[in-house]
Image 1: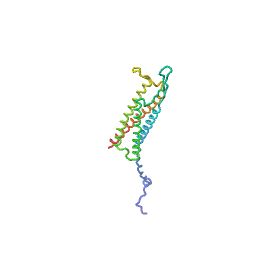
Image 2: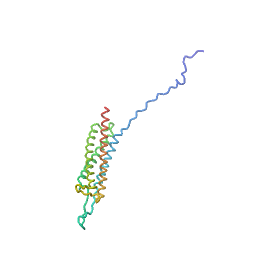
Image 3: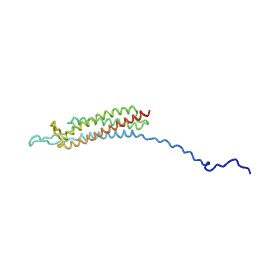
Image 4: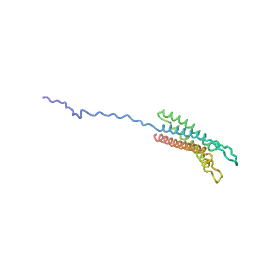
Length: 202
């Protein structure tokens, strides 16, 4: 009997495990442009509603000026310079949020997102608008506090006990303006973070 030179491989060696292919690379979704768009939409909404609320805060009351004599006196935002400043600042914020929001939406369709140059411009204008809106909000808060509490040292009397509706509308508008200021602050932080990531990646 002739011996065969070919050896039958063991079952374990015959059935070698197939080499598993590497899983396809997973691309992480960059959520920073989405957050930027969401914050700019929030800025537009809060600023617009604040303008509408303070513009509709007009209230007329009969104020006694003499025994048996009362005259109608009206309180509205354009009688208070700090409120005019607030409405102007919020109007600029509305327009700015529309323009920059549109640019952010366009950046979502690009592979590279917002360019470094445009992001730097966003930082500058976001910080500038933050200063304007925050200062207008602070000025409106100061005047509203005097209207609520008065000032005995200067003889300024409080008016919110008379014009209660006007003061409530003004307070709601100031609260929304404060939210707009915080939103701008978050936008500044986000833009600085994006710039930091882009510069350290190089």
